[in-house]
Image (cartoon, one colour):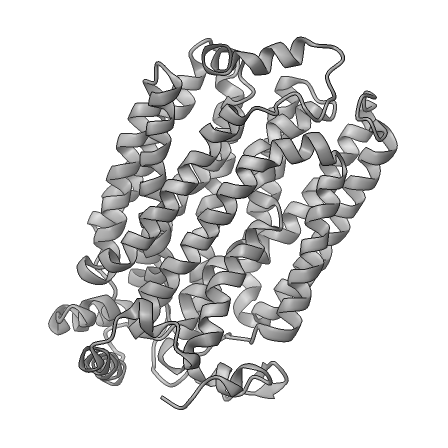
Length: 500
């Protein structure tokens, strides 16, 4: 297997195992944690185009929209409106750092349960909000819920899945995020004409949180987590269910116990350990992968898709339909990724998807430049608005089989046990921090940069594609505890790592 130009022996057979019904059901239930994140992404953008919602909380936006002279890019430029959207992500950042210790202390499964319950309370507050303060408080609680689940779920999936099929199981988290986005967009479309429809949209976030929480109560924790907490007998049962009763799971269990005992003997603080030279590649990936994922621009476009499509010529209903179409394209492309990520590897998907997104963003910028002019005061002809939608679908498909699922998969599979929860915490925190900044500034950027906003993201897409070519090794089929090989044989990272 090629890893940055060097061959790595395929260790997918180091431990026997097959895809059992138990591991499939367990991972599907765990991956449903992505529902709450996806639902929130979809709902946030939709309710911000609903007249009753804007009238109650953000009347200044309606006053701007009524001004015929307003630049089409600037109608929704409101700092309070963006604070509603982005407050969740600063809370998620704080929660993800706390969740590192929580995940290690109480397990992956229990952290998901805590996250689901916190999200449920936040959803109830949002649905019953009477003022902006109550609205943002609910968002903050949603952020804590998402922070906990985004920390625990990807690790759970990587630890539970057989090495040969870890990519497919890992991408299921992004698949459920996609389902959440599509369901939310459909719900927004259905409630847009109801005066209290925004309450229904925000309040029904309770449903995915209940689905995830109840599901998590019915599954066992991962063998790695159980061993880490000294529950070896339970870990043996969990591993036997995951790998199959006719499989000898003792070698894999022994490796987990050996690794866990070595970690405990070292008695090192993970947040200090991860900054050691030998973990430099892991640390770089923990920062770079989620940072680059957000700079693809996808979440910003997902948040504000209805607003964006309304700005470029669609009516309110048409904008919501366009958002549903965009979400469905993204969902279908994630399915494509699930079927090919373990066959062709992670790098090829990164490279193809990155190239496709660059083309999409540049093309959107060109269409908007030609049709709206530099001032952004011209109306976009209906046909060109549809062309923007088509180009955005091409872009969304590229994301759906590359940076979407792989940005959750790669960080969850590259860290050794001693820094796994810490590395994932940093990755999730960087994701939230970058999302917060971009969500807080996107509408202002759209107002001032106009079509240049899409060129801004295209420039970052070129940068991250070059980063993948040079620095991201192939991790397909490598068992978690043997992942050090990809760094030892990489042309650049081998100078930092040492033999375990």
